[in-house]
Amino acid sequence: MRIRAVDGSGEVVHEVDLPHGADPETVLSGAGWQGRWTGAHHEHGRTVIRYAVLPAPRPHPFQRVAAYAVVVARHRGTPSLLLTSFTGAPELWGLPGGGIDDGEDPGAAVLREVWEETGQWVHLREELAVDSAHWTGRSPGGRWEDFHAVRLVYVADCPQPGPTVVHDVGGSTDSADWVPVDVLASRRLQPWAVPLVQRVLG
Image (tube, rainbow, N blue to C red; front, side):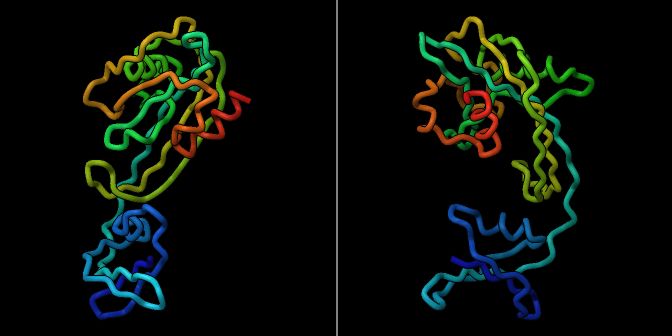
């Protein structure tokens, strides 16, 4: 499947293959265009989706600094990893954590976030990594953003793992779970979290 963007003069200004599962308007936005679907046709054995486009508005720069934890414990006698799923995408799992408040210590922030999202009290063992990602696209609220994510990731222990509870009701966390390490492959993890989990689990 292919996206073809045409400006007001009829000139093709952008054309690209659509990645599997991607939203065409998000792909166009990432290339600096905002578009209106005008139809689709078959061409050389594949579908071409047509959009009439205008240059997208200048993105709003936004940086988010957040802290996360890789938490491993023996839950019900089994080595398990503490994960959270996301509101609006419950099939996608990630590390517990979230944004650091103004003036808040990152270590304190991750302890607070883990408790809010999972109901678990944890102890930080060590700093694991600083992860950074940058993209342009629509925020959940619809704003066009030049987004920079900075993630401070820790390794944490949970001395008394218990039933998970999402205290931050109405936030970005849909659910939390202790996932046995031997079935971890059955969960779809956020791509950025995968190598960090692998480093901790060995």
